[in-house]
Image (cartoon, rainbow, N blue to C red):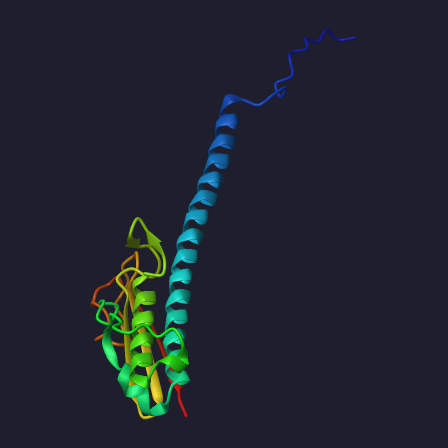
Length: 181
């Protein structure tokens, strides 16, 4: 038998370089997952704001449809959300209010919702959209409601209604049209 010297197996374990490469790959994957989670959270927040704006627009349209078509012009304004519609008379029951009082109450309640006053934290509005404005226009039997608010990241300002909200790259808008017969 030939005299062979057996050396230790060179493949008996991982080298330090292999461990470092594996760690770099794992850390890169974890950081990618964290970044993806943060992006998903931001997108979810933006979607929630858009959903809230759509809901607010649908709310005033429902209030307008509940009244007479002759009263639609009473709702036309570009300044909802500026605390302009303080209710002098709060109507709690439809039968207890005349038409003008009901319109004033609807405007006041919608403005409170736009300003986020339905949720309070330490005496300040905590709900709703940031710097939100509501705009209502009526053309014959077509109601157009635009809700404008301030987003978190800059984009181009492609405002559907240039008169609703403050022009900036942070402005977001939802515009909904409805017909009243």
